[in-house]
Length: 173
Image 1 (cartoon, helix red, strand yellow):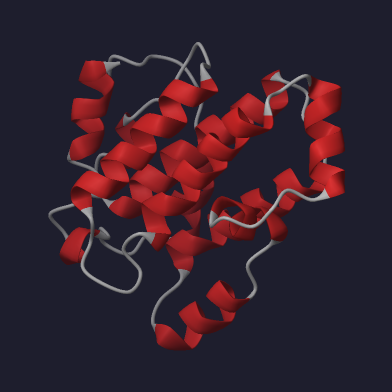
Image 2 (image 1 turned 90 degrees about the vertical axis):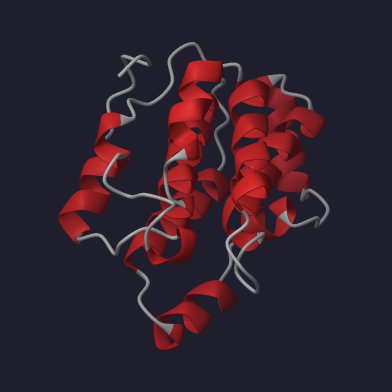
């Protein structure tokens, strides 16, 4: 895990969020958390790598789905609590994962890129999820924290789609 996190340290906030999102998606699938809120958050966050400028950012950010707000501190809805109960997942563990996922981006939106804060948030997601196989890092290695003030270079739709289909596998790449 330490080597994996060290490799993540070089990656942009956008790449870190994508890795955390893949972990979140796998966690939900493995634990059979069946609620539309999960796919809504997933679809919403996968739009982030393509946002370019304030004219796109403001409408995107203001359309946050319920789980994004939950990750920022809102109470869990009855629908979410029911799904977590059915999946036998503690709400506090789920909140840690979602809050970490959201914090990677939102912790830097209105100030400078928060390298340490985003790494702490990513670490929380990885540890709290307890999934066996983490996403391969190779596809993310061109999106670096050293580029574009921590956000990484803009990526294409094709790159984003490739990230989204990341095959979980070799964690030592």
